[in-house]
Every structure is written in structure tokens, then in C-alpha cells.
Amino acid sequence: MIVGFVEHEGGQVLEASLQAITLGRRLAEQLGGPFHAVAVGADAAAGADRLGPFGVTSVHVVDHERLDAFAPAAWAQGLVEVIEAVGAATVVAAGTERGNEVMAHAGARLGAPMAANCVDVAAEAGDADGSLRVTRQRWGGSLLEDAELAGPVRILTVAPHAIRAEEASASVAATPSVERVTPALTDADLIVRVTGRVEAGTGGVSLAEARVVVGGGRGVGGADGFAELEELAELLGGAVGCSRVATSLGWRPHADQVGQTGTRIAPDLYIACGISGAMQHIVGCRSAKHVLAINTDPEAPMVTRADWAVIGDLHTILPALVGAIRQARTAATGVP
Image (tube, rainbow, N blue to C red; front, side, top):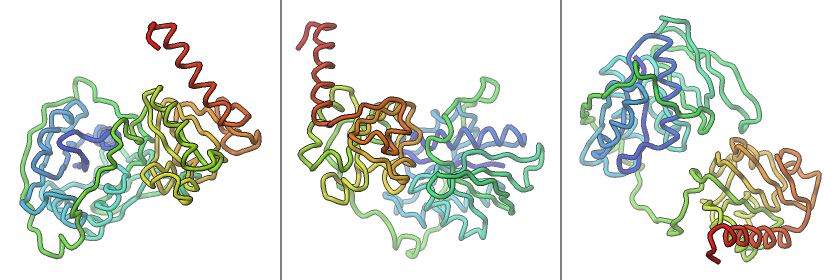
């Protein structure tokens, strides 16, 4: 039995969870066992139909009057109760901040091993209770490690954007049943919990989900310099990101940081402006399909890793690029 832990927002399943579910389903098909999912919150059932095409046959909705916000230990308790009830041998989750935290709590409660940030997993056919061979990202994604994961319950998280979310074949897709679980929580399970949320209020496209990201680093020159990046991102229907140095200098909020300690992105196009390309930043954008670097240094690591590079002052290049895009749109639509 394999169980996938699913994160959602108001019943909308997160893309990272669909990626993890895809890897979990492939393992379930290899071992020939059932594939269930666990989600937390009263509105989690709304996303059950979205999981059916990915091969999930049953969704366990963990619901409790005290689970109205994220509480890692409490979420883990609900997950553990499902694992023990269905006899799961393997648990798969997205390698997000929440996914890794909940899985770590679950592993501690079960005394089970956990492998984080996996990109592949395999087992001997029919050996549902044996060890798993996992390949996972280490050292900020700069290398891959092959390891063996063994134990009565094996827990792994999937590195975001390492697996493409793919629906199952018609023969595997199903309409999942929904079962509600009320966990036995204690006050200790709720010591750490979210007590409030402050929205960024920027609206627009989420950095993690944007198809186009325009990022800025030290070369932007200051907080005011990001206005040009914001204009370009708006024209392209994208989002603005930044390097760690831009955050450290107070030019942009941490929510905009792309990198190992920030947001990991996977856009169709990443436009890196004035970013030298430190390893932690490369880790955050390595899943971008294409990279355009704008930099005065032709030897900058970001330039050498980019698909295309423009060598020059970004404050000259960006206005020209914005002007060309506006001119092209006017010519195509007749609207300035």
C-alpha cells in the first residue's frame, strides 16, 4: 500500500503535490498495490476528483475542529493514523516546506526513515515491503545521491519540479472514494500552528507558478531599479523574482527570492537581470526551460549557464526590450 500526502489551497491541489502523486503512482504500478491519498481540512474533499485521473483510488480527508490552520505535528498525527489504519508501507509527499516538515514529524512518530528531495524511486517488482532505491538531490541540488530506503514504513518527499505531473492511463484512472478521518489530537500537537496570515497584496501571478519570471540581482542597483523589471514582467504576464543579495539589501521581500532558501521556480522563460549566479540561486532556477541572462560580465556563472545572453547595461537593455515588445503588440493589435 502506498499513500500520497496532498497539499491544497481551498480544495485546489498544488502542482507540487500532483508531481509527487505521479511518482507515487508509478511506484504503485510497479509494485502492483493500491494507491491512496491523504489531505487535511474540511475542504480537501473538493480536490478528490482531481486526484482520480492520477490513479488515486481513495482519498482520506483528515478533518478536526482544531485543524483550521497549518499545524505540522497535528497534520502528522492525522497522517500517521491513516498510515496505521491502511497498513501503508510507503508514503510520498511533495518536497515543499510543509511537505518536508509534516513528513519529518510523521517519521519521528513512526520511527520510520525518510528521504527528502527525491527525483526517482524504484523497487523490485512485487516486493512491496522491501527496500526502495531512491535518487535524491543533495548539497542544494548540486549533486544526485543514490541511496537505499528500508523499513516497515518508508517516507520520501519529491523535489519540486523534478517530476512532470502526468495523469494515469485510462485503465488506471479512477473515481476515488472519500473517507473522513478525525484524528486524536492533544494540546501538544497544536503548540506550533499558524495563527494568522498576511497576504502580500501584490496580486498577479504566483512566483512559483509563473510561466515567465524576471529576476534581478545586485546589478539592478537598488529597489527603484526593479520598476523596469516589473514593467517587463507585466507585459509578459509573468512575475518578478530576485537573488538573495537583493533580499539581504532590503530591495525586495524574501517572498520574491529565487533560490535554495527561497522559491524554486520552473518557468518557460527566466530572464536573469544583473544576477551573477551563485550556486544557491542556480538551484532555485535550474528547472527553468530557458534562461536569458542580461549582465555586464560575460564570464558570470549565470551567463555561462544561460541559453541566451545579452552583455550590457540592463538599464539600457530593458527599456529597449520593453519598447520593442510594446511596438510589436501595437503592430499586431492596433492598440498602443
